[in-house]
Structures are given as C-alpha cells and as structure tokens.
Image (cartoon, rainbow, N blue to C red; front, top):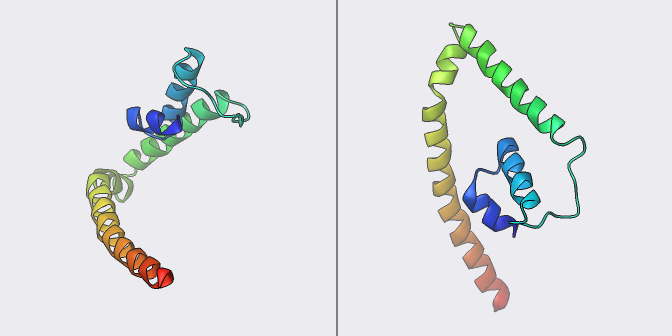
Length: 101
C-alpha cells in the first residue's frame, strides 16, 4: 500500500500531507504509526526549509551560488547512485552465488 503512494508523489513532508489526505478520502490505508503533532510539525518543517532557502538566496556570495548549483549537485548525486548501484548489484550477486555453493 505504501509503494503505491510513493509512485504517485514524492516521499517528503509535502508527500506525507498528500498521503494523509488520500487516506482520509479512503483511497489508502494508514499504518498504525502516527506522526506526533501532525500536520503542524509537517507545515512547520516546510516553513523552516523555505526560510533556509530564503536566507541562502540573500547571501549573494555563497548561498545564492549554492542554490543555483542544486540542479548540478542533484545530477551528480543521481549519476553516482546509478554507478554505485551497478557495482553493489554485481557484488551482491557474486556473494549470493558463493553463499549458495
């Protein structure tokens, strides 16, 4: 049930708000665990992150450059994840083959 949610939206704070809304509509079932203080904690987290981004934008020397480089940093993270993923998959296959012998 949770997998269907992650395919439909990002697994983030705002994604959790969508999840709760869909659960209330009866489209999904919620797990037994409940986030303490929800939705106040989620909305305050989003507000905090937006404030951090705003403060970074106001710092022209370092912060603005960092914000403008976020797409480049994200692309590098995704590319490195795919590179490591292949290697981990090969290592795991080799270990499972050796374990089965």
